[in-house]
Length: 262
Image (cartoon, rainbow, N blue to C red; front, side, top):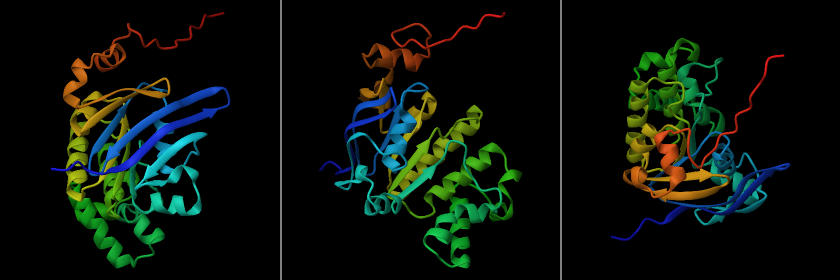
């Protein structure tokens, strides 16, 4: 059986903001149809990496190839190429309060692809069903939903355009452990159902273990380890071991500023 072709190929990616060198030479590949989870602490550069692939941040150096096309150049054609085939689940759901739930799910269909409202609504209701939400939920406003339901709606929106690539930004942030597992299961199910290539960023190890085919750890702007979820507990890397176990003591030292009362 032949290996899956590389869908996303990141090489030598660098990005700085003034004197803050966030990405220092990231090398990362994602085969088509596979789910890669990038872990790392706050401020490690996970979000900048994701925004770079999405075309929201322009790298200083390096390449980001999608289907062999270097979208890091960020020409109009590059942006259209990446946008046309991606879906995104944002950390805070990022739903539009002024729109109904079904209009949120069908947002790209309505305003990007200019599809008819009736057909777009049918597709939205279908996607809501795929994440376990009844048709009547589509008539509600996002403010009427719980945090877990908002995450489901955001996932339905991400898959509504049948994307080839899915991005998940801290998909379980703010959810209790049970709802987090529900969302993780839905992500695994939907990614496999549409055969998408997925990149997720998270510091939630339960989520990483559940949704990843492979896990990569980003630390100080570079990938320091990559392996299967089963290898996380025996990575042989002291920084990965510390992060996975959540220990304060270890080679990763958090910068803690102490304040004194005057």
